[in-house]
Each structure stands twice: as structure tokens, then as C-alpha cells.
Image 1 (cartoon, rainbow, N blue to C red):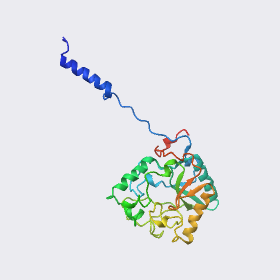
Image 2: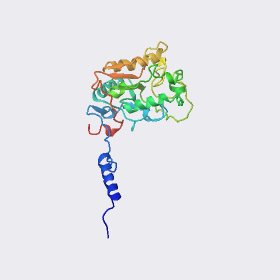
Image 3: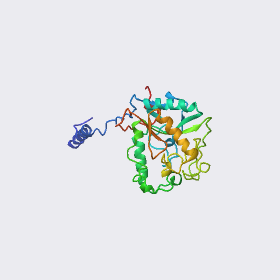
Image 4: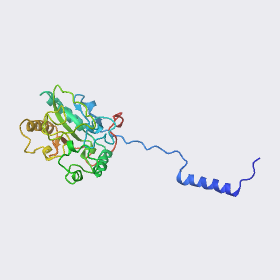
Length: 269
């Protein structure tokens, strides 16, 4: 037999109902949909399958030393005009016995935020010897090697190099292996099937400046080959990084996107 509710029980019931109405604490949480790329973005592989990929930030072989936030898959996502311009450059290079290889393409803002957090942790220098051997980690922002915004996040900037065909295989990086300075002679630094550009990729050093006078001979010719074939298709080089090029006019010049590097981000495009 159930008697009338006590005043205390009634108060507790009323209070719980009020909290539920105000806070929704007992209601099921609604999932926030993951951001997706606008229809102007494509996977480079759908435009040109012959361009090689070595997306470093999806691996542990980069200046952070771990896979970077936002790189769910080792893909090259770009705005369609930039991808089509790379295809035209690839056609010209293949006729000369070379191919393009991309290291990074669209970069989500969450990846840039990961770089910022890493830079603040001055104790983590596991990759210093290879990527910034002569630069203090505390100076990477003030010296211009890192920034809190990246043109890559707008979708028309790409980091890339040139490989002679047939392309040799690049061995896998082994975490914890002995590192060598990125500006060491090619035979000594980490092996890369790229032609010799004078430094490795993401080398935080003045020798990575495209026009550094210490880069001569075949190394200079290789940089000029890359810059020349891309300039013909509308790409502009960042003078501080021989590998960094932006296609213009950019479809999204003022937007820094944050969708993940994943096939699902461009599915259905």
C-alpha cells in the first residue's frame, strides 16, 4: 500500500525535475558533428595518382616526434585548383624523368595548435638534432620557423620535393634511432628518395632558405627545377623554405580550416 508522498520526498522530486529542466544533466548528450571540407577540396590522389606521398605529420618522423593532431590518414587534401596545377607540373616533370613527392598539403588548425603546445614544452627536444640542431627551441616562434596560423590551413599550400624516376623506396623511420643534422651531407642524413636539395625537409636552418648562397651545383639546380616547374603553374615559393609553395589565386584566402586529414572529410566531393 502506498501512502501520500512525504514533504521531503516531494521536495526532492521537484528539485531533480527543476535541475533537469535547467541543466539537461540527465538528458543524453548530443554528439558534435565533425567538420568536413567544403566542396572545393579534393584528395590529390583522385586528381593524379602518380604524385608520390610521404605525409610526415601522420608519422613519428617529424620535428615533434609523434603523429600530429588532425592527421587521421596520410593523405594530401588540397583545393581543386591547387591539385590540378600540381597535376600539370607532374606531367612536365615526368616527361623529364622526375616526379613530385608531397610531404604536407592541407594542415588543420588543430595540427598548428599541436605545434604551439609542443613548442611551449622546452623539455621535449627528442627531434632537435635532426630538425633544429642549431636553433634554441625557445626561439622557433621569434625566429619565424613556427607560427600560430599556417597558410597550409587555407588548403592551397603544399610542401614537396622532386624524385628521380624510377623512385627508390625510402626506408621507414625507427623511433629512437640516432639522428643526424638535416643539413649534413646527403649520404649522412636520413635517407630520402628526393634529389639532393642541400637539406632535408623541415630543416629549421638558414641553409633551407631557397636562395641560400651555400647551396650550389647540383643542389642549386634541383631547387631551381622544383621552383621553375611550379612557378609555371601559378605556385609561389616561400623564400625561407625551399619545399613550401602556395598556389594563387587562393580559393579561400582568409579561411583557416580545421577538418581532419581523412578521406571522410572529402567523401562525396
